[in-house]
Length: 181
Image (tube, rainbow, N blue to C red; front, side, top):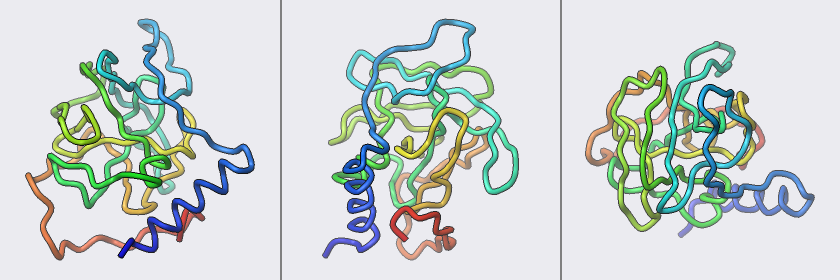
């Protein structure tokens, strides 16, 4: 049986695409040294380099340093994932694109461990054992996916994940926000 939130999220993504709203595309470019990143999609593909750095953003009414990709898009982690396996696929993956890379570069403010996890989705970037994603509804410097569908903004101080998720782990209720709830 498919989870109702995932089905609803897929319907929401299809509706957005039908009216010409948000699209998620893969890019392989990297910003020039010393410039502010522009809005675009995450690094993708075997030769691409993922650049992860921190930026100030308002999350839940508080300004804090969050992880962003080379294009300034906020990075999220999915609570049900394990440190070695992404559980995001299909329509959910179109709404929450995976950050993939062939190589990694940690820039200013990144104090945790960046890794590349090789799984069925390709070479996905992880931070402190949490696999990373962007949100199709975000723009550079804008956080709109916090707490939606069990995705949470990644911060430089993100607590390292364990190898596998524990069954029965309590997950706090997330705000609605109109994306499938």
